[in-house]
Image 1 (cartoon, helix red, strand yellow):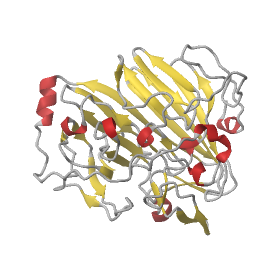
Image 2 (cartoon, rainbow, N blue to C red; image 1 turned 30 degrees about the horizontal axis):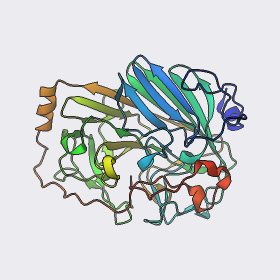
Image 3 (cartoon, rainbow, N blue to C red; image 1 turned 45 degrees about the vertical axis):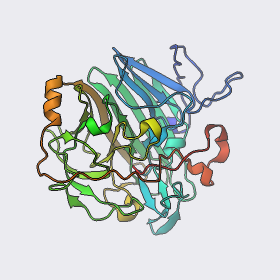
Length: 393
């Protein structure tokens, strides 16, 4: 099925439930199908000893395991995704200052979905129901349609393909402007990596030359080189008490054109995130504003097409003309190294010695807030719950 037909909700295949039985597709609720669980239906994919769980609301990743061990630090069924766990962030990622921007000669005002910073946060897709276009044992295609609305008067279809392979998880996003006017667009993903220990003991490696300081609203200031700062993780080093909620760019890519960042636990268990050339930015968040047991438990490493407030700055902004398509691919790969090698990596010195950043948790905790609660898309209230404000990544 092509993406245009998917936009019209014409799905020929239903979901596989957790038992593998064919179920009616999303949008074809049947008697006895209530109450609707938080997150909607789920699709469970397998490849060898790997398993992922994708949710109907937003088409995000709830869980990824290999050999029964968590690869991603996900969340439980029936729980709203804490700290935006596993969500797809589009048609904008991160923050838009005051929810305002100008585009195509017109001023636009979005709902303020993060009151603590007065910003519109992380787009619209993460709270939209998706339609399953293709379901197989290790392959899933889901489609979300962003219809024109106040603040974003553009119509964009987002098609997300999940593939479990022998090399881990591969995810491809394809955006299509099905409207009659150019549309601004950016996208990011928000997975947390599970390396078995808290972030203090993990080795973080981020191959980036430049980082972006932020103001007290977590909006970007002028970029700076990482060299000589506590934001330098090019060589990989033990994280310690450093605090990150930081965007990186000028990414070093491998010969295959991919950028790869990773975390490694003291026991040698690690997780790698990779992304293709569509993603010029990585956001790294050390979970300092997560609550209780999730506090500094795992890193979010988020491939992004653009930094915060790109709708105003224009930095790395994608503009989709009518009929234009954009696509980008990223993935997650678990790995292990021998514990002695892991220990050696923990002791590896940074390029330049510097004091570690003191740990000062912010007050703006993880966000599962829905723009609908600010006045849009109130029609599916059964998927909404009382929620705390967002962490900042």
